[in-house]
Length: 117
Image (cartoon, rainbow, N blue to C red; front, side, top):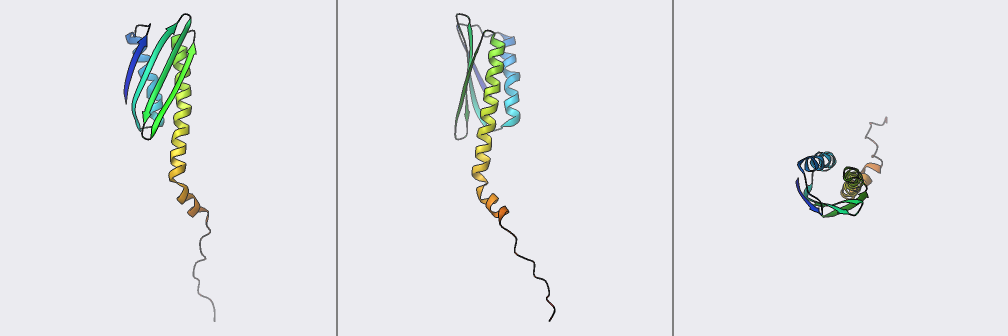
């Protein structure tokens, strides 16, 4: 997973970059099809904002979080992304598995047993 980290009105320090990397490892546990992640950290007066766009096969997942502390904003962002990625993954699995679910629900034909004459 490639993470692009940019900052608007904030310097991206090594501890901040490491924190973002370790938090995004949590998403990698749930979903392996992540192609690219673009994270923007910004500061507007007293608001710390973290937003991210995840490029996956078949679409994009976007989330943002605002808090007074940048680390708390990143935590909120990861929580939102985690829920969205799990939901996206379940949709993909359910969509592909519809035919198998119907086949599993059909009763099996009775086994051919020898009938006495």
